[in-house]
Image (tube, rainbow, N blue to C red; front, top):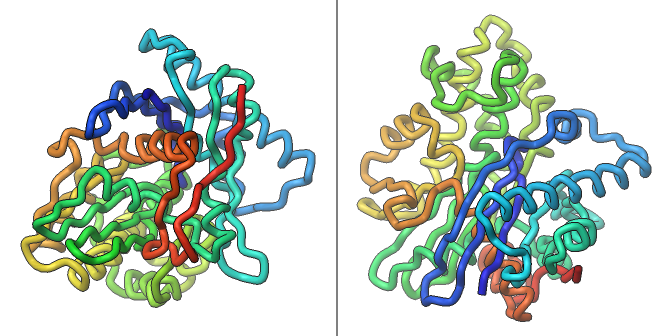
Length: 366
């Protein structure tokens, strides 16, 4: 069985596609690509958390437009790798999250990129809208990755962590004889990327972390940022750009106007490091292995700081387990697509707090 996973993460920096073969005992990654967003749509998506007012017509058009972009990316991917669409059983599409609000009177998680558009344009069945099934069962709807991390990385003989450094960082704790625990630790790249874009027009992000490395951390600002209520919130929990937006950051910078933009960037990186390190030290014993995945693995300065903050833990990119660190999330949605097509439940009860294991997502036929 071949399934394809496609997503765009919180940072909206690329569209990730993975093709996975499930015929053997372990999933086999056949191909993986990161494709660029059309600039005019990427710009609209990046602006939404700061000014989230859309007319119904604009929302509907954007939903279809993102679906069309996803379909075009899939078609380009298949053509590049010389893969016939008829050989793919299903596409698992995460879509693009616009707003994630799993608490309140009417909880929801909203992703766009309509599955019907993708299915009709590609001629392949599409499974999508995975998060709302979990939210409807009183779950957080996120993170979804820990259930798949168990498939790839669980070790019956030792406790293992899996740290995903996307726009938002999430951690999975795989401990023998204990339920899986997974949750968002806070921002990873989303604030770093947003602050970088505000001060640089040449690139969407500081890939190696050189800008952050060029200035010292401001301890007072770091303390202020770590006072965000999310860090004190009990489990289960999840977050997104709704909580950690550029608007929120600019509010926190009142009283810190003396800092250079590079100092702020350096402090934002340390926010990522400290919010992760606190959790790891509390939950994983010394010597534990932590697999690292997500775009943040490519950030040399972030990796240097994480290693320094966690000297008693073994940090290793998932490449050492045979899976590209950038591909893990796209593989997750290839797996979720397979689970939905086969009408198999996904157990998130100990991760998101949902009432019971559930079949996640809907299925759209070509």
